[in-house]
Length: 250
Image (cartoon, rainbow, N blue to C red; front, side):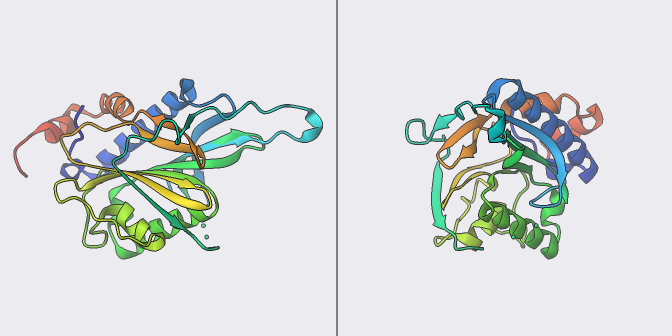
């Protein structure tokens, strides 16, 4: 299914779709995409990003229980590189953060491993909102949380190179520039000692690709964005589907 132009509908319509999409991603990841020692859930956290964030988490078993953690699973960057066209890296010196985000946890003490955020119009509607989002994303990377940020809204005067461009301007040495015909960005960040960004630029009318979500700095799983987007779109009311599927300019 091609990406729709979500600027054509109300913020409430996007928010409803956003919740459905988050739920579909959670279902897909917990349904077999994640290794057994990880789980993902939508939650509000008094920290990085939000309010609708998926967190990837993993438990930490006390040594006295004698429970051996299984290997992490996932794909190794060295043998199966992510499909994104752009890759950049940056070193961050010691560098910090309430909203619903998909949080990935490891089942050991349920520590957060990664965050998945679907950008909303409100994240870039004002300088303060954008600054807050960027600061929290950078702080999350510093704290060791891997990130996957999906931005299906075009740049504004506040983020002329998109959300990823604004984030990378804070930590990278080489500025990121959006291709003129690809204003939307999908960006996965590996939060090792050297921060790496795996970026795919895209546009309305194109299909989404699978994007990496890192479990460890060099290990990731693929998130089925296209499959989950299509499943979530089924819940959009016909009234708004007609608007989204209308090819005439507004």
